[in-house]
Image 1 (cartoon, rainbow, N blue to C red):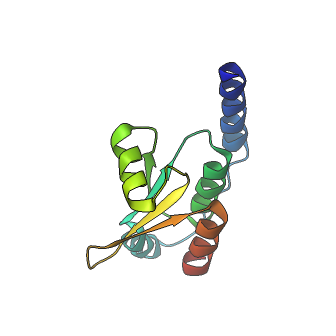
Image 2: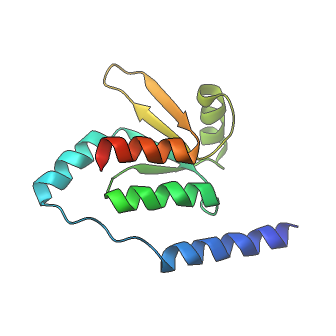
Length: 119
């Protein structure tokens, strides 16, 4: 079973690489403003998870600069469980100016949020 998962993961990653969306065209100033707005965002994800790929593609399509966090690492996994309530990916962590964080689960919800706020 592990061999099948490994193989399918590689197929997903190659497919994502070959069909990667292009970045939007913006001025340097527009991109810098957008990068500043998303500097406090982190996407907890697994590299070969199809739902994580879906969110990463949306991030690229919108040209966002969001830090990717490998949720398989113990420290990140425990952080995810403690704050989001479960070890489910993808999970978007939005660190707010007041020091609090919002944890958003579900790829469709994350993509809708990003589309609404940054398209």
